[in-house]
Image 1: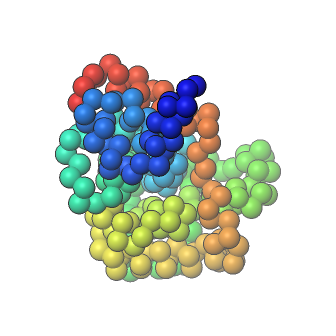
Image 2 (image 1 turned 90 degrees about the vertical axis):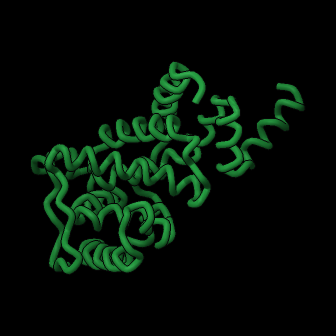
Length: 228
């Protein structure tokens, strides 16, 4: 790799999302991969929080990226690109969950008496053994949060989005985000006590092999589609 090539790569890595979007729109479609790799984990966490299924979360991510690429010219910069992108993934995940009748958003005044039972059969011995790890316990507890509360916790506490960003992403008010986050913390604290906050950043990770798989699938569709 030449010095000029290295400098060009370094420049792209430090560019803002919005500047890379402009380059993609100008015809440098390969740079869409940079945006994907920056935001893969956030989109995975958002979709996984709603669907509670790894494979479906990946499917939603791919569709969200294709949708975002197809409508990239509509990004107007009023919100951060990451928020715009996450919103697309959330809407795709919610639509899928609701089509399958697997999503029932909790009422705003719902009680915090306890966590819901996760979808599917009872945990098998392998799942129980893995659940001894604190990170797995945290993910399991998050999965049992009520619909509506679960994605607020993941986006706000795990992903670190602001209250305003989460509200815009989920089409709810700031007060709703604050209420649901408080409810989620209370539920998780009952099961995990004070360790919840400490381990939150380490859950629902999206590591390199899965990142490569999603990027390859989406870039294949982007290249087949041609120019935006």
